[in-house]
Amino acid sequence: MIGKKVMSLLQNATKLNQIIQIHALIIKTSLDGNNFVLAKLLRRLFACSSANDLLYARSVFDEIPSPDTFIWNTMIRAYLNSQNPQESMSLFFQMRHQECIPIDSYSLSLVIQACGRLKDPGNGQKLHTQVLKIGLGSDLFVETALIEMYAKFGDIEIARNILDEMAHPDLVPYNVLLAEYVRVGEINLAHDLFDRMPERDLVSWNTMIHGHASLGDVGTAKKLFDRTCERDLISWSSMIAAYAKARQSNEALRLFHEMQLANVLPDKVTMVSVLSACGDVGALGMGKMIHECIERNRIEIDLKLGTSLVDMYAKCGDIDNSLRVFNGMNNRDVFAWSAMIMGLANHGFGELALDHFSKMISEDIKPNDVTFIGVLSACSHIGLVDEGWTYFTSMSKVYDVSPKIEHYGCVVDILGRAGRLQEAMELIKSMPFAPDAIVWRALLGACRIYKNVEIAEEATVNLLELEPHVDGNYVLLSNIYSQAKEWDKVVNVRRMMKNINIQKVPGSSSIEVDNAVHEFVAGDQSHPESKKILRMLSEITARLKANGYAPLTASVLQDFDEKEKENALAHHSEKLAIAFGLLSTAPGSTIRIVKNLRVCDDCHIAIKLISRTYKRRIIVRDRNRFHHFVNGSCSCKDYW
Image (tube, one colour):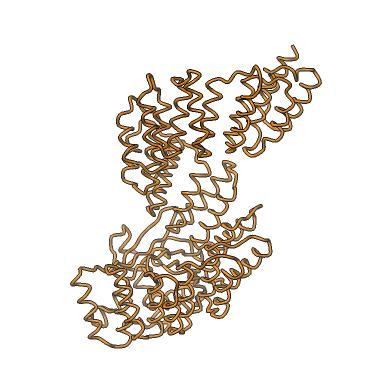
């Protein structure tokens, strides 16, 4: 009677402290000699303990006088599931030396899996020999484990041969080999196997969707996703992650909406991908909704999810909420600190970013290469040249972080923005590896600021060797020639672009209103409310001119008259987006814009005036950084 009561208590126990109390009852009632009860106790302990916390369960196991095969297998499996295959192997060999403890096919399948995960072919081959000796070579559990083991050894052909020689394989060995093909990147072999499978289940489809998604083949992954008869959390999460990783963020957000309509509850993995997509397109409203969804569904905000929230808010222009989430995290690793430092740097709060770096070091968190990109960016955005050089040299000397080409690019940017172009050029020539396009573009951008044609031409020669078809490189050089009034060279650049069919990428800006993202292209009139937007734009221009605004028509490179140049400037994408924002949002509310290119000088002047004239805070994220426009001033202090 007491045994049934104990079993019932174990069945209903959901917390570790409850199971410990039941264990005390088992000892008190002398049921600690009953292997059936002890096996149930161990299983409940594994269910209620964390993956890395098997100490109490192991202490129970070690006190069992005569554990049977089932109990040994239970313990071996627990270590395997907690990512400790070494202890699984150790327990198996202890078990094998016990008298009167038979080893069954399940014991062997577990230890073979452990062997594969440890990549231990020596013991793996011995175990395979033992399997054949005791006549278990045709056991389904053992054969499936052997397929996985040899695949993890890299012996794909042997794994395939074992499957081919199985008399009556079910779906499990097929799915195991399919997953291993995907894991090692053999997607063609995976497809061959997938096509010849006698049947497929959701695991098979998910494996193929994930395989193509992880290789960046979003199109094929979507075709498979659309063909599935049923979809679970893994199906949706894999596809959303694929879109987010490929920077097809609007598609990721659309699919997440479909997932919600299908009543599939997201998990942390899904949320990380969706937050990444929100950050990419600056969809703050959607990002806030995701944050609320996380809290409403009581999804644990662990390090990865917390860091994703910090990053999302920062990329969407809400640095206050980014800081709030960061400060509310119980634990913060180097990735969380780096996301916060990078966010602060990109918003122009360089001093605060460097303060966070100091706090990070004081908490004994070792910085990595990403941290230093944030630190050097902070120095670049606020003009701290000497401090930037000090941080750069400290990377290898103090923190044992080898500078990568990205760090050299940051220092080139720091020197270039400060007008020290010759030093920047010397640094490029002294780099321990060949400079990439980003480094040369940073130098070319600095040449535009300081109108240095000579160094610009040298930078362009190198840049066009690396990126002969990128329109922005030609546009930058053309701007520099235009500033220097070297019109013949401007014409030559245009001719080069025409001869090799280089099309200038149009400026585009997006704004989120009521959880919908509206995108505008320069000169665009395709928006449903285009007439209202153009009327608003005319009103804005008139009010700005009344306050002293004069369009910078010299920055228009096309062969237009002055009126046409003014019209072209007035219809830049960020101005269209701001006009729509003024029409569509509450008076006094913040307007947030995301632009694909650098904000032009004329728009920068105009937006400062708009922020003062319309009493709006306007936050613009361009290709390089954030600009916070408030009451006629910008956070960049015109240093960008």
